Length: 411
Image 1 (cartoon, one colour):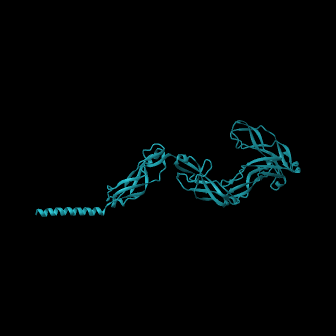
Image 2 (cartoon, rainbow, N blue to C red; image 1 turned 90 degrees about the horizontal axis):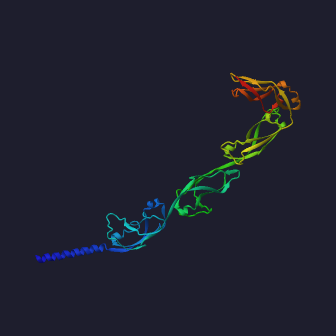
Image 3 (cartoon, helix red, strand yellow; image 1 turned 90 degrees about the vertical axis):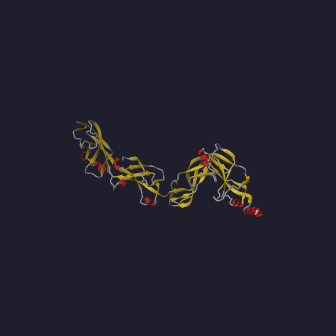
């Protein structure tokens, strides 16, 4: 029996050794390089909170020579081997050289204990840190081509009107503005669309391919295009002073400077616009030659392209005779309640105008002066009141000029 027991013990040992050798040969060690492992930087948020950023060395790879069991080794790749550099301790800009950490992202059923790094290239990671800056860069536009004849381009509008740019301080501070270029020819309508832009330096050079990060890649660009139209200026002549609508062409001559202005707007707004009236000219107040100034009115939806905001009207009345007459027929109406009114002015010289024969036939009793106190100040004392002069029974002769009288008001 002792002999049999010894035999079986030796046999069991041999079987165990055979099994161990079988398993060992089934999953032997394997060694070799794992290449192109990308470097990942951690602690970037902390670095940026100090106003710093990595400017060089961000895109690096590492090669590791690794020994391990075949079933584990063959799982190694850029997806399962992590190369990490922690930059959270960096305080100052400049070049930095730092060791990296290696970790594995393997299935939970696989142990990385058999993996041994026998060589690595490079041994450390070198990178550069610079100060970070963020600026708001204004957007400007330029057009290559132009608008069609009879049209005018307005001003560019952009959305956004400025671009937030982040990057290395020395690079960001080179940027003056972002230029959008619209390439169109013979434009006859408003353009709106998303366009790229180019950063322009303070020296006027294009900054192509600079390492900055903008918050937008395209800018919504709108360029209004308006139709142009030359519109004449006119005045409205009010009959009076011996001049009627039928005789105005015989006695009145006037010149407007400028005679017209260039206006821009939509076709629908411009189509009905035939002229621009500066206002009224009361011929009863024009003696000889008068020069009048008018502000040029324009609807808000239109634009005065000429840029002239005022017009001058030189108007002359000729071919008529004037005469001065003494008028004492003065009437005061709408006296304020509770007050007594006394006419301090009892007689007033009045000028009339018309043809020589018509003026000669007018008598003073045909003229009357009316002072309307409806808008007068209800206060005691002397006041100068504007009056209106009427010439009754005549249409071929009229009163010219402005007149007033003095009255005294008391309770």
